[in-house]
Every structure is written in C-alpha cells, then in structure tokens.
Image 1 (cartoon, rainbow, N blue to C red):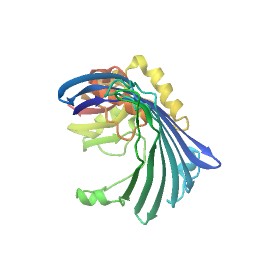
Image 2 (spheres, helix red, strand yellow):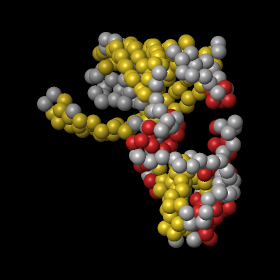
Image 3 (cartoon, helix red, strand yellow):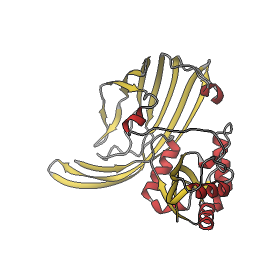
Image 4 (spheres, one colour):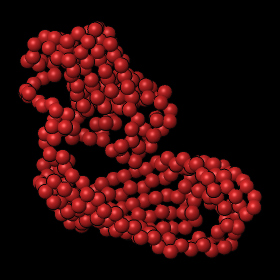
Length: 319
C-alpha cells in the first residue's frame, strides 16, 4: 500500500496559570486529503479521500519549576532549574469515517496519552527525559462493517541532551571577532563615510521609526557596492498595514512593534540610490500552530507572499 496524504491543521493554543503553575492548552482541527493505492485481496485499486481528520487536544502543566509568570517576570527569570511536568493528549473521533470503507481519514475511536517529563540542568547541558503511553478505545464499526477492532497500548520514551553555546564560540569558529561595540541611534552612527562593506540587522528593523533617516545614514557609511540587510523582518503591503500592525501589537502589547512596509522600502531605496531585493521566508520553524499553518499555506502558494503579511529579507545594495 502506498499513500500520499496532506494534512494542514487549524489550531489554537493558550498559556495560563493554574495554582501558580504554568499550563498550556492546545486544540487542533486537521483537514486531510490524499491518494492511496494498493492491493486488497487479489485486486489492485486506488482511492482519493478529502475531509476532516480527528480533533486533537493537549493539556500540559509544570509540577515543579518554571512557575506561571508575566512577560516581564519571564525576561528577568533566574537561572535554569529542575523541572517536572506532565501532560494529557487526547484524540477525539471527529474525522471522516465509514465502517464500509477500508481507508478512512478518521479512526472512529478515542485515544489518550498521559505523559510525564523531567528537565535537569547540568552546567551548560540540559538533560530531558519523557515517558508516556497511548491508550485506545475500541472501534466498534471496523471494515467491512459491524466488526470490532481493538489495539494494545503503545508506550513511548524519549531522551534529549541539549547544550547552551557559550558566548564567543561562533567568533572562534568563523575566525572573526567584534573589534568595537557602542550604543547609539540607527540614524546617527559615529563612523566615517564610505567605511563599511556590510551592515545588517536581524529582526530589529521593524522597531525603527525613522526608516528614511536610518537608510540615509546607511548610504553614508557604506562603500560603493556595499550591502545593508534587514533580515527576517515582518513585512506587509501598505493596504493591509493598519490591520497587520494592530494584530502584532495585540499579540504582544508589552512590546510595541510595527511591520516593514514594502512600498515604503522601495520608495526610500529609489530616492537614496539603493538597489533593493526582497526575499520572502515561509519557514515554519519556531512558529505557533496557527502561524505554522499560515506559513505552510504561503509555501504552497508563494505568489501570495508579496500581497499578504509575510516574513522577508530586505537587501539594499549601494550603487
């Protein structure tokens, strides 16, 4: 049997405090479609399925360490500590199912996975261990109908070791170092004209309020042919900017943010003599469930990136 199935999901997650402990609740509703081919008995066949898959929900809570904190408290948290946590994952039989069909998107049964995990810091290492088990109810309407199917429990155990990279390691790897550091404003930098080959910022330019002044200063500093890069910046078109800005500030009101507006960057670049290149990023790494689904959709339809809010790199080259 061979199957190719696609299954994006619409999900929602929320962290909150329970008796002073940090907790998280997530719910996901998958939609699946795909083709399945194979042999049933002595006959070869294929089938296409499209519809809802089973709903999944997960509740997790820390029993020791990492208490519930506000964003400010989290930013000022002390050194890492020993953590014990537990979770319960549940799959509900909400997916498309028929006992008269061998291939289904739903399972027509409930399943539960209790799990416990520990994380123990040892100097620059974090030692993690997780153990859990899946429990399944019976499917009382299994193919070809009116049959009962049961499944024994499945146990699972995971172990991870992670290492916190010490400061200065990358400088030794790439044989480079920071010669000078200073604080200042993006549009007033105490360096001479035509003295720099490369200027870059990472996830910072969307905090700049004076883009024209900043890029004018960049043009002064760069040598001819020099490059300035705004990397991994939230961006959007002017028509959707008010809505997009409202959303990002509703998401993190404690840290006022903005988006880099595509039309503004192109106009400023043209006025200052820059060549500009925009590269969109649809990576789903380190994104939440809803954002992950959104960027997965953009990766499937990349032409949409320039019309809707999307992470982007802005490359300015001085003529």
